[in-house]
Every structure is written in structure tokens, then in C-alpha cells.
Image (cartoon, rainbow, N blue to C red; front, side):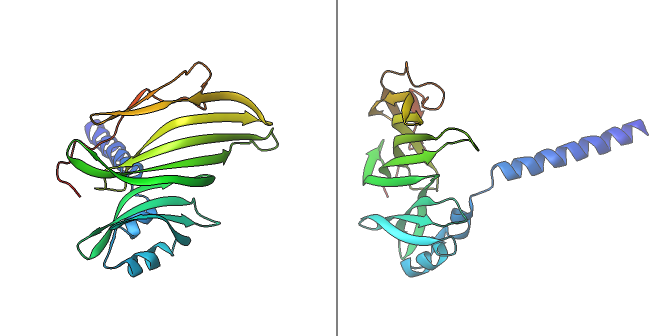
Length: 209
């Protein structure tokens, strides 16, 4: 009886763990619903289910699109043309006002992916607390083979009531498949903290787009 009860408990625990794991790796709504479409017109109609669609930047066969909504988290999405279809090639969910500075192709270790740079301002004010915002400059690196992009912070200011509490200015370099950010981190604190190095995830692919 005890053995049977132990087995039941173990199965329940395993089932709960599997459910939690499935939730943790669930694909975000936009790439899950609009992963690959037969034309750009169909891609646009699919994205319009999530908000207002705007092509922010464009390369030959590639589009960087913003999707904004009053009820959903806004986002930037990269779509590339594969044959006659349009497939998602990167995404970045945004929690504030943004401006895209640049969008380009780049080759890392024989694989061609995409990079876009933007400025971002987010409101971090607590309820009934002092006005607090974070201003950042970010570089996003996308292999183009999935919706995943690596986010690299190159500049950050954390302001409370207009006064800087934390700040960071970094210099970005690409070494093999790694983004290396150098700079004085003595005033970066917790909000503006950023790692020295980040893997870009291009080494898993060798064929050009």
C-alpha cells in the first residue's frame, strides 16, 4: 500500500513538473501564430490580430516590423523571405517607447544573420512612488533561424525624479560568436547591470541565409 501510494505521489510530482516545464518553454504568441506565411499580405493580416503593424526598416527580402497594441506588449519582429514564404527570424518584446537606429545583415562564423539597434525608454515607477525611468541603447543579434535574438546593452541610465542613480556606457565588439562589452561598471548598480560577454548563438548554423 505504501509502495503504491509512493508511486502515485511520484507520478503526480512528475506530471506537475512536466506541466511547469511545458509552460516555461511555451513559444510566444506571435511566433506561434504567425511563424510562416505564404505571402507578405498574409503575414501582415496574421500580425494584425495582435495590433497595429508597421514596417520600421527593410532590407532585400527582410523586414523589421513593429506591432503595437493597447492591451498587449508591443514588439519588434524580423521576417525573412524563404522561397515564396515569409518566416519569422527574430523578435524583441518592448515595454516602453523606442526608436530603431539601424537594421543590417551581418556574417558571423560563416552564418549570415541580422542585427538591429534601438533606443528604449521604460517607466519603472512603483505605484504611488517616485517617478523612475530607465533609458537604454540596445543591440539585438538574431541568427534568423528562429524567433530568438540575443540582447546586448551598450548604454543605460536609471533616473529617479530626473536624477541619475545608475549609469553605464559600454563599447561593443564581436569576437567569433561572442558579443564583448567593455566599459566602466562602477556605477551600473543592479538596474543597469550587464554581462561582459554574451554568446550570440550563430555557431549552430553554417549555411548563409
